[in-house]
Length: 134
Image (cartoon, rainbow, N blue to C red; front, side, top):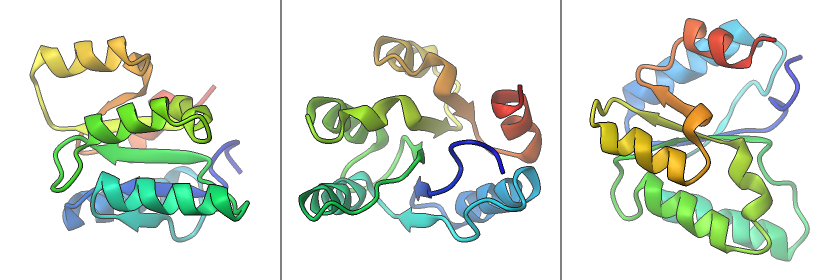
């Protein structure tokens, strides 16, 4: 099993992107988390994580988050995670997914310390292999 892929979370509102990422994950790590937890927006994920901290439940080991979502976008989600004392340890395990070609998005990821965690959509087996294989 790939280290860190025990408890995967996907925060994305696009069913096709979610399907593609799940497929890539199964190919990349066949014995990893068989069914990643999915949230359609950052607020739902954030509130769930906060509740889990309160009752001492397990948090995700890796989070794939889209940038463009309703209610709370990926940037807001990452910024809130980084501000929350009980969740900020998750920040290095967040991987931003985006189809944006705007250099400002990559720059913002760099400012947030997630430059190496910026993945272009669609996230494929090859994307995962290039990023996570040692």
